[in-house]
Length: 93
Image (cartoon, rainbow, N blue to C red; front, side, top):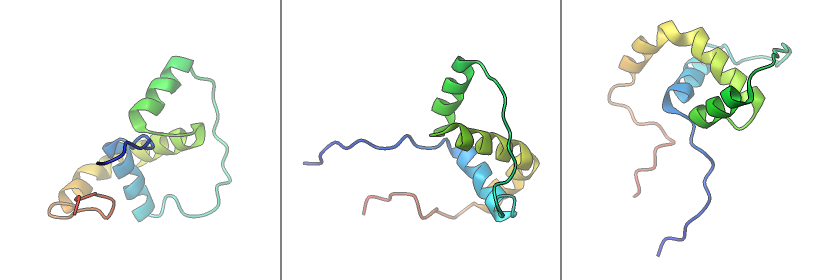
């Protein structure tokens, strides 16, 4: 019998895709030297983390910035993925 195990929350597909596009286009290369901060309502941050699967404030901001930075590239990238299966997909074999 399969024993239940605690899993990390899965990242939302669209945010994972935005990070993938950002990584492929070189936006995530280099040292992390920029500091971005701001005060946000607690409920907004909690909901955004739950929706995105972000585990930290830094990861949440990175996902949000990547999503904004590559939004115009997403449709073409998504179409280019037709017929491919990512390595992270569990096919249960």
